[in-house]
Image (tube, rainbow, N blue to C red):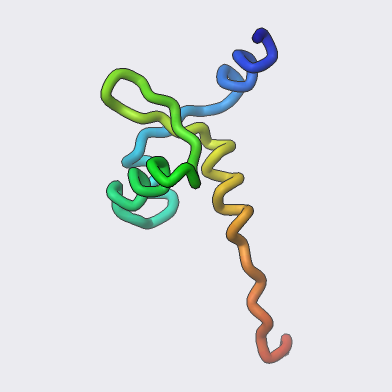
Length: 72
């Protein structure tokens, strides 16, 4: 139990509004991602907090490299 607690203490907790700003989506989109289980969240009272590592993981998992026409 001690190691799990440490992972939460070592990570910044973001609000839904902050996550929406980082991802440049609406708050409703963030709520949908949480409800669908795509984005982990912690319930604090009536509000959600999302670990910055979970946001990073979500975005990294969806990263795509676009093949361009070449450089230069």
